[in-house]
Image 1 (tube, helix red, strand yellow):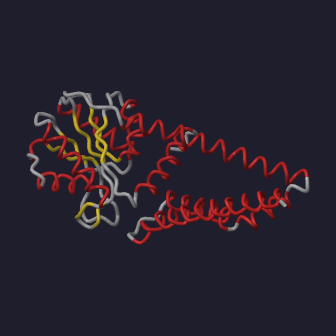
Image 2 (cartoon, rainbow, N blue to C red; image 1 turned 90 degrees about the horizontal axis):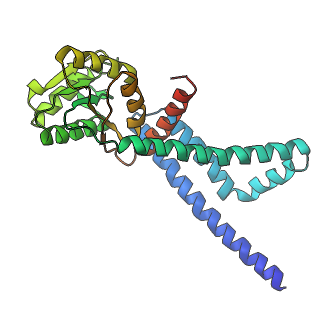
Length: 267
């Protein structure tokens, strides 16, 4: 009787834990879904929602999940598949932790005093900056006000759904925030981060600016930017922009995937 009571109590505790964890993953699923309402759908929130859906089933549907696992373990092949998934899951967690440490390290690399600011563009909605782009612009303006002698390159071309280039949008917004237009140099041809850096280097060379850079982009994007900056022969410094909470998970996951693609030579 005592052992049955202990087991019953343990089961209740595990059920409670599963309910709490399932609730956390459900809330996280909604956070990944939220950007879709604003028109943002990419591999980041798709992957995030898929992962959360699986974890919701594992936790809230643990009774059914356990039955499936027990059934699979009745055969050698099924047992091998189960343990293979477990191993890859653990390795995946370790890997994501490793990539996250790289992102944090790049984010905490301060720029030199004698530097050239490079603001990387992202989506423009009509002629107005998206929320992420505005956060980059605001961070750039704050840095430029604290460092009144450094020049600034705004880089980003015009997408099919944009009325003006990202560079033009950033240029206009920086002026509104009190930055002298003579300090701002527009690079409006780049369509990706590689071109952002390469074309900005051409502007640096043309004007004789410092090779020490202060790259303004989102917290999670600084690592990839740092690799491209160094590849271009420039020195990297980070001016990270904050990211609104409901967009951070989506773009963080997308960045982990992008970094992985760069590791294997796909990006």
